[in-house]
Length: 311
Image (tube, rainbow, N blue to C red; front, side):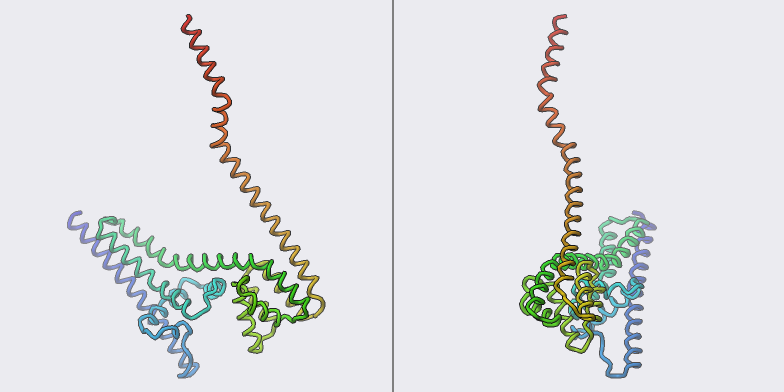
């Protein structure tokens, strides 16, 4: 690399570093101004964000505020709170870790870019392409991680719904109410329903605080966005509002869920059968053809060779 190219690379790296640090500083300053305005409107003793209370380190709190600002910048639809709830990251410590991770990713991208430049992996103007890819990933990776965790937990919740239905039927047949059934599941069913047990524990706290059962169950179904769980909660809401027998609707919901899962299993089996057919055609069929037709082909070749030799 000549002197001119080296100077261009250094200039581009310095500009990217300055832009990244300036962006993070502006986002952190904006978040701090918003917090100050909120405290001024609500009063001097207004509480801070719960994730800031998880640590007393000012640097970590500053990174968390910056991550919160990045979230407001990249998430215009307000999807992050719903994904945090679906992933089970409602605690202040887990939210703090997520926001700090979201703030550190652009800095990590900058360090990787500098390392690539120092190792000579990004010569000349290609460093601009590396910079665009790395900084795009630095904003997208936290969203991918959060969405992946939320989808994995939603899948675990869906697997727990059939067992929840059986437990609810047994508890309601024993004469328990909806609140007592949830309390029994939280107290005795934490080992078999770990994900739903934690959600029902939060439901019980809201009910003890005076919230209505129907509203709490509706908000839980909308937050989790699991079809099977939403169906069960809809039945419980109707029973809580209008009364009546709960065993029959729950058994009907159970049969519908089992039928739906049976169809899903059949679809998966059909897909696996198609894939196995492709595998057999590509790998098993040529070996079988060689095994069956090989001796006849060899004999035919020998006969043709003998005839040609006789001539």
